Length: 423
Image 1: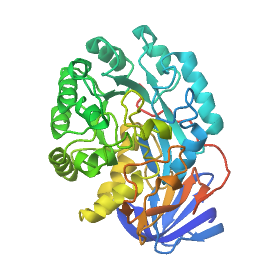
Image 2: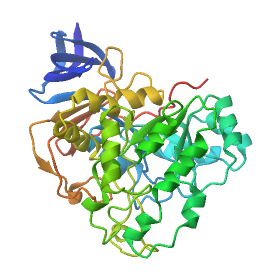
Image 3: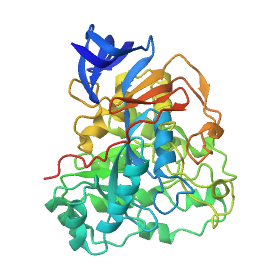
Image 4: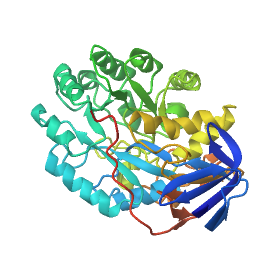
């Protein structure tokens, strides 16, 4: 059999392990995996590099439409390619929020025109819950509820979501707790104004709900995970997993995010829980802002959010190496697990019949993270200068090579993904 493209590497991630294999690709799909898949029109020998499934990042904010000066689907998807990310799920808190069918259709068209990676789109919660079903028919990956900002009857929302078999993802910070805290005057006080109690209280309000598909975004506390363990899936970001307040410079807004980076003792506890396998997914929560909104020390002028789509893979794999974790532990949380949770059929694995969404990673380098080198429009990171041991060098989306060692290769746009489990 002759394939259009054949990739060979001594470290192909296949069925939970790294193996010396060849991968044959035809019409965007993985046609064959084996020690000898035959001839090909084109062959790429990847040597000792790692050939991994492309990262499925289930939590990004590409700011398009509304604030393309911060990021758009073009720049965000290029940043994703550089980070080994082949699929992104974009959040609906645009300006205006994407909570009406016509707004969703407009955003979908923008993403189709600009995105170089595969993408799914979240829908916001419409003010009229009768619009939940019409919104679902437009093809969102799920609905996103911001508990800190929206006044909703959770039982009514859960009932509407469950009726149509949709996914509900929640940003769990309680509005009443946040309103009761003092007004911040510095970046450090901003973090203190969003205390652990805000997350715990919000999660406790979710526990009485009956939902088949509930997902908790960016958890920061072990108690949150324990409370929802039997009823929801959870995700953690690299910045909540790796950084504590003692690690970062709080003279400006660069490390400020919502929910906030926690104290060192809390970070140690969430790391222990993560290593035990009790959190299913790693997500970047890529949240870009303009430089002046991050370098300020004034809360009234600052913006919360950290860019992360370019660093999610290097940081996560380096964490595994530093903690003697098998590479499969991290790869599954970046690829197969989010693909399964969000119903992305044929994605997240190197497997016959699956889409050839792949990333090639150099695992022999020690490289510093430098914000000035980001492809994202956001050039600042709290991980500035941090050394990582892995770096993506090539990225394939739907079988097309789109990124190679700093070069963006124009090819077909990414695909709009609706997700499975749609009832």
